[in-house]
Image 1 (cartoon, one colour):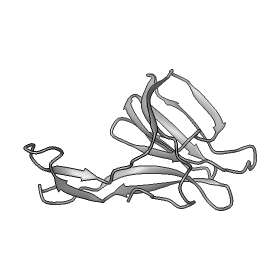
Image 2 (cartoon, rainbow, N blue to C red):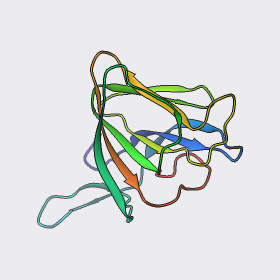
Image 3 (cartoon, rainbow, N blue to C red):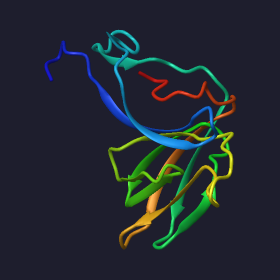
Image 4 (cartoon, rainbow, N blue to C red):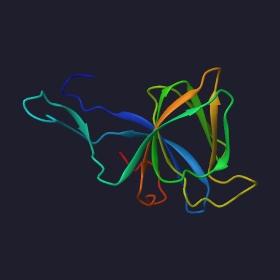
Length: 149
């Protein structure tokens, strides 16, 4: 990527459709502007900002940890710092992620179907999954994928 070429940053979006079923879509953040964070610092690519109340936490999922079917408590970014984890949506899609891969969990308001509601997640491999979670205090967005494009 050249210094003048806008970046495209991939992420997974776990979302709920109008029928209450969760899905995962591969999305990309593409709204970037080349500007200085605070002059005289050199310009860098900055993405769309979100102004909202939020909680930032780090969670450690032990080896073999499994979170049975549940919804994300609030819309949240999940950023793996080390280890690997997976997310399985109600439609059966399973996505494994590690450091450098990002997910936005917004599967609120799902409807139980065949014993599934929301998603299930867990660690992959023989090391704990360390995740940074940025949880928003706002209601979920409309039932459509890729809200941060």
